[in-house]
Length: 183
Length: 442
Image 1 (cartoon, rainbow over the protein chains, first blue to last red):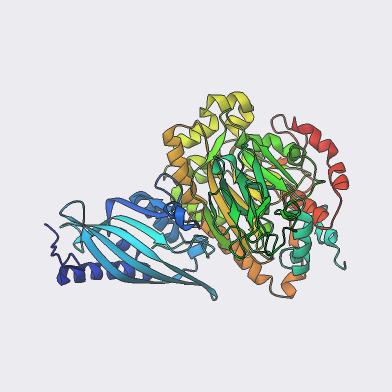
Image 2 (image 1 turned 90 degrees about the vertical axis):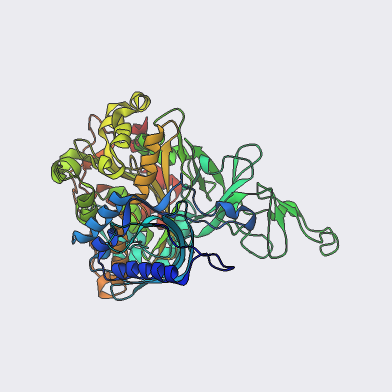
């Protein structure tokens, strides 16, 4: 099935598709915030690439180098199996960075949808604001944007699968003792 | 000074006073007597390959610029304008022809010499002596197998003597092939709300925490058909060794089984690092190239690495209660592409701010630091007694002072060195106490 696209000066998709995609992203955020990690994993295609590059402070003329390249190191550079291992770790009861668990709130904003490489795919850009509270006094705030590829799937419970996710944070030095959470 | 810093560490009894992690006065002594005197790791050759390439880093809390000069040598100078103290360069890295201060425009060349002063004729009447007002230069810079070190102290012993008997172990990481090593692009940098010594000491001396602190990661990464105690983290101390240098450096590793590397970075890199690279076997010999596995290491004071996993990092002090970790991934220059790729992914997946192992370290260190806010919590010593008095010096494979892998001998060595240095002991005294041990290095 082809994703519905309709051109206009500011958006290439119709309101119904926009609504559907936003609801899908909200559902994903809810799964994470409710620690329903197994259901969250099911939202990803088997060929998912989940990637968060590192970032450095650069002058304007070298801004093209601020994010690490795909062949350089990354905060996350995960396939499906690696994401599953991370969930296995959290569920072990001995993942001390998540035991007691963090409290997260994923806010998803500014969802912009564009046509993907194939008729069944969409490029979805969203801003995220992620609050993490931990123990009594730990507070972390992660802000950035994500570039997802969403793939239409008749077999998927919610009609779509996340086939690619790139997360670009607005911090260079990460102002947190760890990132034991998902984005 | 009122505080007797040497009295806060009792290496003979195996105790440390927790104030060393938390006290502001001690911290200032540490910046002055440890960080402004020691050889500190600054950068790897591969990070600044071309003339004009630079990166900014810290020596203690002092910001420095590390620059590849036109003649190929490396210049290191304070990242601070001599006019009114402004930070000269505010980027992490880049390439430049010169460094111009954004406050009033004083301009420095790649060696840190002052070469330009706006309105030099009109405002200064051509009376300023620019030769006197260059950036403050680091007293000594040296390069060991691609690793660039510097010290503020002109009287510090040569780098090779500073590394001393740790060289045998450092080479297992740094000198595997003639082609040498390089860092992959990108860096993991983050903040721990904890004293830098917790991290430096752990990488120096603490295999003991791994099966507990990192139980979840070991579990998640170990295939179902593998026995963790036998094959991944053997719990018998004699299946590994710990080494402690009188110079404060330390390392620990397994020598029989303990194939944690394959689970962390994959079988191919594990094979490559554990005997699969014939050149490394030739250079390093059987003990270091094939049998050392799952190693942790710290070169005193704040440069740590994990051979095989190949993360390396600096623990930058940021006050007594906070540190920044700057971590990179090292690869053999001539490693096969699939080994490099597995290394690149495996390091980030395990030892980084989001790494499945290192996430839990942050929880430990930050909570210790928080507990030490309490007055009573600082009144009783910490226990660093594991393996006390059980070391030996005649190991057939591993030179120097060694012990079982689960041990705190290297922590005692680290803290004794730290206390000697922080209390202001002279280099003559510091090096005299290790003369015999250094001879072992070869």
